[in-house]
Every structure is written in C-alpha cells, then in structure tokens.
Length: 343
Image (cartoon, rainbow, N blue to C red):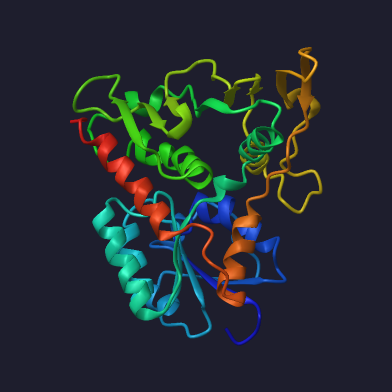
C-alpha cells in the first residue's frame, strides 16, 4: 500500500460484487478504493457498472496490477482456484463464504498465504446482522439468566429452486449456501462445540439438491444452539428464539440490510438497514421481584461495512483477523460432515 487506502480488485462481476461488497466498500471511501472488476464475459454483466472502475475480461491485468493490494473473490464457483491465483501473485485475499469446498483446500491456501505473507480470509459479513447483534446484547444483559437454548432459523419459501434442480452437488446446496451464515455466527460467538448432531436432508429424494438442514451444537453447561433452515417454509420461523433460566427472547424478523439492498436503497442513506418498531424483538423474563416483565428491545444497528473496517485494521494497523483460520476450518469441517450422508 502506497497510502493508507487499500486498493481493491474483484474477481467476479455479479450480484455479490455489486450488491453485497461494493456498496459497503464505497461507504468507506476514506479507507478503500475499487480499481478493477474482472468478468469472464463483459457482455453478460447485468448490473450497473461502478463509476470510475475498470471492468476487464483480462484476469492477468488484475492479478499482476502492482497497485492492487486486495483481491475479493465473489464468483459462484472456483473459489479455491481463484483464491490460490491471487495468493500466488502476492495479493491479500477475501473469498466469499463458505470459502472453499473442503478443509484440505482451506489448509493449503492458509499455508500458502502464510508463505507469501498475505492475509487470506473468508467473507463473513453476517456477523454484523442486526438480529444477531441484538441477540448478543440480550444474552449479555443478564435478564435471561444462564442461557439454555438458542434457535436460529433461516427459512425461505422458494420451492422452485429445489424442484428445478434435478441433480445432487454436495457443494452447491442449501447447507453449503446458507448454513455458512448461521454456523459462522454460532462459532464466532459461542466457539467450538463439544459435539454436533446433523439432520441434513434432500426433501425431494436422493439425487436431488440438499434443501433442508437442522443442526444442533452442544456446549458445556447444558447449552444447545440449533441452526435450522428449509426451502419449503411458507411462513418463516422466528429468526431467533433464546431461552434462559429467567426468561426468553424472540426476534421474529431478520436483518433488513439485504431487504434494502434488493430495492437499491443503499448504505449512504442514514436509515439504511434500520428496523422499524414493529420489527423489534420481545424479551419476557422474571425480574428480581419475581414479576413477569415483557418489553420490546430496540434492534441494534447492523452494518456489513464493519467487516471491512476490520479488514482495514488487519492490513493497515496489523490487528488480528476478524475471521480466523481456525473458525473457517471449523465451519468447513461441519459442512463436510453434515453433507456426507446425502447422495
């Protein structure tokens, strides 16, 4: 880095680059500059191009550009191959979740990154979901007492996706595509579990895509954390249900950042991603006088740009990585174990 700004190049020019990364990087223009975006076919880009950014179909022009400090891999496939190329060219790398397909691939890339002296990190922006941050605040308030059980749901009613997929690919199903969000949240907050139980299904039968999972993670002191998702939930279950010895907390709705992004209401708006009062969660508990209290909990502000704040601290101020190698390896080991019974 020639200045205290990090110059960024993207490998991938689709939804991930234009909806989930660049709006937050551009919102940190004092820290980052986007220089280049690579696409395999420039004629197939469906998104409005970023202003003052070079779009190219020459991958080497991005990999070999001495001005680019950080490459972000956002392609739907070939995460391992593209990440390895970037590391070999001496670039810091962020790769979309769940990072790569296997623990062995990840271990190889982390070792190569260490050899080359570059940061290699999985993109885990969901650590800054407002619902997850609110759940943390409630658990840390002490009002629930000891936490006994946490349920985390990530439901959709998108039946056309599994119904129109007539093959099984272990790495491109619901587990790899969505459990990578919730499992990372669990790992980042609760750490490594004592044991894990997997219920990973193909509701349409063998030879079809994985479209359901229900994973229980068990910790010391009787704590159980469950992450559950399905493509066939016409009414979503609450995003969070938390039970403690003194009460419970329910957050029905999920973080609104993605909702705003989908309607092109971007992070430069002051109320971007903010919950309305009707979306606040409900805390029910017994106080010190054994009175049953029910109160609405204002949602903590979520902000995916905080992921990039952490990246900046790592690259410029030499702070530890937000998403550690150990956390990514643990997540991948769970995905590998969970999918192995599907065929």
